[in-house]
Picture 1 (cartoon, one colour):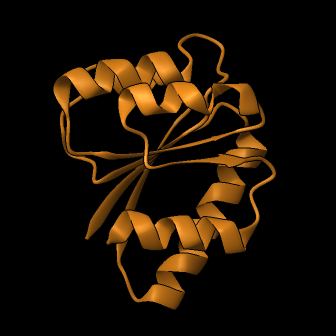
Picture 2 (cartoon, rainbow, N blue to C red):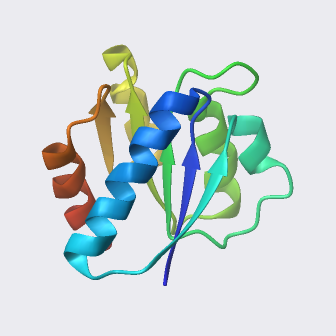
Length: 121
């Protein structure tokens, strides 16, 4: 089982990511446990290193994804982080938290699946 956290404040985008994960799960024969969070603050509250992968938006209301990733990295150096956002100016900052990838919204399934292939290797 691969434990995945989706951190996305927009419900429509969160559902899109879930659909991509479900499709990828079927096509790849992996098994996922998916937990959803609506803000960076939600995932870092009582964070424990139990996720294999975090798919996270950057621009969120209370705690943006970059700040949340910095806090997560203090507690968990192994989790794979993928940023998904509509703000390309943050791409360089993703290197500070050792993010695997940075995908722009709207997410196309092909690019999503390519990133997932890399993440699961």
